[in-house]
Amino acid sequence: MEKSRPHVILSAAISIDGKIATRLGDSKLSSKKDKIRIHKLRSKVDAILVGKNTVQRDDPLLTVRYVKGKNPIRIILDSRGTINIDSKILQTSNKIPTIIAVSKKISKSNLKKLKKFPVEIIMTGENSVNIKSLMNHLSKRKIKNILVEGGGTVNWQFIHNDLFDEILIAISPFIIGGIDAITFVQGKGFDKIKKSPRLRLNTIKKLENYLILHYTKV
Ligand SMILES: NC(=O)C1=CN([C@@H]2O[C@H](COP(=O)(O)OP(=O)(O)OC[C@H]3O[C@@H](n4cnc5c(N)ncnc54)[C@H](O)[C@@H]3O)[C@@H](O)[C@H]2O)C=CC1
Ligand SMILES: Nc1nc(O)c(N)c(N[C@@H]2O[C@H](COP(=O)(O)O)[C@@H](O)[C@H]2O)n1
Image (cartoon, rainbow, N blue to C red):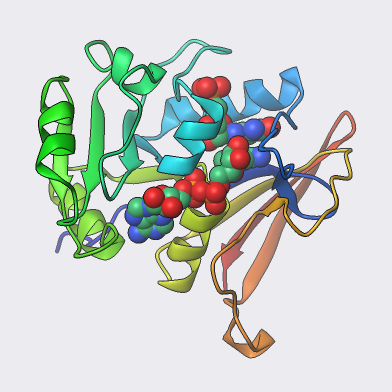
């Protein structure tokens, strides 16, 4: 029987105090070696997924550049289709397969704007993108594994809805601090430790001043 969702790996570079970006959105935490590690991983997955805020803040390419390898399909969660038309994601969508997942709340004008680009639009969910049904849809499209590269709001949705299998964390040698800085997991958070998913720490790897932690669910 076909699995109802792809295998999901959550990945982030964090400061030693668990932040993924400063309060101003600076998230450049990875070293060159760490980028090589992440690009190797990107080259092995079918798709890479991020949230709209990450696209707005970082203007990422989400491609494989530090190593040789194939680019994964890019998936952006953008409920209202507000992604900037000048973003690298849209501007390179003629070269790299790109899916924009939107909700039924998208305006006609934003839908029209997206349709001008060679992207696939998947509409699911009333207010925000229904990630369970999106995963189901992607599974039917033979997307077997997805690398979720944040941000914190998206990570919370995958964790809260128990839609992940592995977590890869690079602890970088920085301290960010501040209650307004984005943490690895945003959202409402669990109110009791017993509600948190149980994780098994599989490997710890030292990469210069970085620690790469690999967890799976118990
Ligand atoms: N250090 C690192 O490894 C990384 C850092 N970042 C940083 O994280 C920050 C962005 O994180 P956040 O503000 O938490 O935003 P986010 O990147 O998680 O995007 C959240 C947005 O995605 C959209 N969305 C649509 N459907 C959704 C759904 N079902 N679940 C969740 N989101 C949905 C909504 O517009 C929502 O506001 C940026 O500053 C970025 O630089 C992002 C990725 C990795
Ligand atoms: N692994 C990792 N380390 C960091 O320090 C980061 N800030 C991120 N961010 C994620 O990678 C995306 C940038 O990708 P491109 O270099 O533009 O291909 C960014 O948008 C986050 O998803 N990751």
